[in-house]
Length: 273
Ligand code: KIV
Image 1 (cartoon, rainbow, N blue to C red):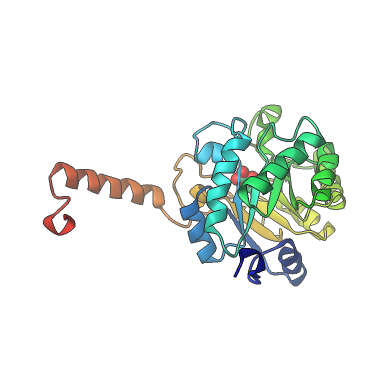
Image 2: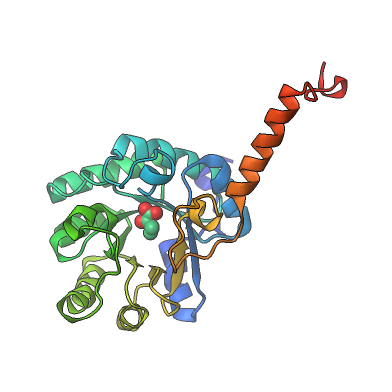
């Protein structure tokens, strides 16, 4: 049967996440940047795989997310899309791919959709990017918003501390959340803000909120894969729960392999042709 006739009724779509919010089913999102990990996450039942621009840190080793390019995001996203059958794949629009103008934003979003086969894009920012969001949505591309700590603005903040602790910044976040919903975002990531504020935003919106360091009241949760797998000793913030100790396991496996090679214990005759 030609691919375009195959209906995948298990695939998570914008309609599915809307129903999940309405029914109270929590949305589980994780980042991934390659085919193998994406396959494993999809098999595990992750609802949304985010090809985050955190790839700049986890995959490329940059200190911030700013240097990663659209070309690099395309390569990571293609691998992830090939690995996923059920999950929705959302790709981050990297710094410099939408800030200059709504036209640039549309062009970048179209490129991500066309060249990767992803299901949606995500961009950071509120009122300053409403026209961009509207234009991307009008092009038929689903958009996830991102408020609170926006890592692409780290130099403006001067660090990665908690955002919107109260006062004008909290008020602005709530207003931006409503504006993004009105502009057509189908979901909203809330990063590193007080749990009470995330709860307020979640109650005020009809679109789902997905939190990272934003407490338990959001409609879903997202973590960076390498962090939750315990691959990064240097990053253990309060909000992070580690579900494995993969960093130690990988080092131990590589260590035993090195010892076997040095001692001529690998390969054996049974492992040779
Ligand atoms: O890039 C990323 O991984 C993200 C998540 C932290 C939400 O934006």
